[in-house]
Image (tube, rainbow, N blue to C red):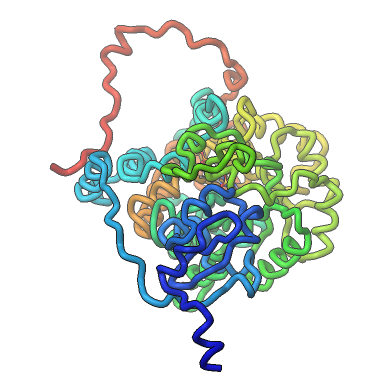
Length: 500
Ligand SMILES: Cc1cc2c(cc1C)[n+](S(=O)(=O)[O-])c1c(=O)[nH]c(=O)nc-1n2C[C@H](O)[C@H](O)[C@H](O)COP(=O)(O)O
């Protein structure tokens, strides 16, 4: 045995570094040595990134992108070679001047008490996020027209406020899929929250749970599903959460995910259908998510440059159709909501195929550019559902471009059950963690309460179309020549100030 034991190479850094080619590829993650040779062509993130770290320690790049259980999900037992013996010599990373400035801005970050609105969170986050995180969070498809239209469309809707109404007590509470919520908005599923904050989706879970707001957990979350669910327990009570599903080409894996989501107490299953493949997000792609790669692979091995999005989406099944929704209904008792619906006819199909809800969404402009703003689709959907007496048959949510209480209020007046915010909470979490998430929720609640009071309505269920004027909503004329005198006098609000 001694002779046998002696002949097994010790898993030292020197030994690991000998296995650094695509035909013999070892990598160290969290102190464990893995043989990724057979996994290399299957890696959703492409080959380049693995080859970049062949024979090296990849822990730093692995942790912000993958949930901890990713290695168990993707790797066979024989790929796990055992613990590293010894340590790699730390090679000090060269710190660029831009990185020094970024770290300085983090030190001078405004105090949370000075944050007044969602735009402030975005402004601070943009100053302190790493280039990769910023590119991934902010990016949208092609020319990012839909990204901007999502928010701009709200500017084409005005209010018809009522006066002399007793508005002393305003109640923001409502129910989503039969479950009470303290306000008619939720945190929408976004991936890779750990790129912006080390607690990732867990601090979002804690913040939403403490504020009694629902969190939608992404299939692509950077924390494991179970740790996000566990993170939502406050004093033993689980927060309200939904599971957002990308249907996997491996349908058995999808079935396992659905059953596990039900076991862990999800209040809804949101099936995202607007991303048969993730969109063409050039900001993200420019970052070449594997950025500083200097792997000299020959062209035929190389996938085209893919940002995080493309890298993450290779498992999404592009062949999903309405009958798959019927099949999924047989697998779970969870309410099923179709996320990413963009035309009124598909809302009727969602009802026909037994969905309890839809989210009118274009993925925050990250999918098909020139998709209409969901608020505009909502204004088409609700009259049709009322005409067919189907408005009580389905809950209609929407997301995209929501940044103010007035945006939420306009959607509710037009018949939305509730609205989702994606980037707003990524920015709040990235800049200030759990407390940032809580502050963002409180700011939106305060704005919404104030807006309802000034609109002359005190309960969510009393909101209706009479409170909004949508006559300009479809009017996408070229902007009328601005009145420069007025425009020149108008001073835009200042961004939040960084401390000296
Ligand atoms: C900003 C962002 C959005 C993502 C998102 C990641 C980011 C960084 N990702 S993505 O990795 O596939 O693109 C998801 C996701 O995991 N699943 C999903 O259903 N929607 C995803 N969305 C869309 C999100 O759920 C909302 O539809 C969208 O963010 C709403 O627009 P706002 O950002 O303007 O609120």
